Image (cartoon, rainbow, N blue to C red):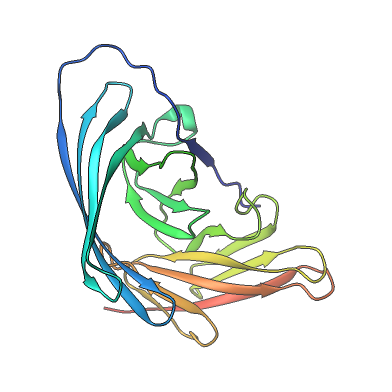
Length: 229
């Protein structure tokens, strides 16, 4: 049984003790893919004040000078909270942890010690934080907010055959996806029918495996891997 750890963050007021100014400047660059085969390049600048509690707040701006809908600049307030990965969350802060953003269906990479999360006003972020493994393993699903504990019946890794077997269960007529993290150095033997993305930071893969539950019985799928240079 997969037992994920969930961390929910919501924007709101934060009370902080008096502190000297430890300001910081952060740059962000993103490329958005829009419907109709459009794209937009965004550049952001944020200037923040930080507090010992992990909270930070300040002002920032976003602009786009490229793309079909480019040519604008937006200014506003921004803030967030740095949450240390401590033993209080059931995590070993000294070991690498994989982070997944449930609502956005997005892999946030490998983190040790802390993870930076920006939470916009009146919004919520739901994260799954799990120990990084040396072999492929389930990182999340899109079928339940608990991301595995309610819908994953079994997960098995066979090191000799380099196979990951996932068994999921949902009511009849449901469908959903299981996301698998694959460390650098492994590739799929049979990629047909799978959605595969490569992380540019650590060269790991995120594999989306579709499940369809026609009659309500558990569905089992096996992913086969091979070692690559």
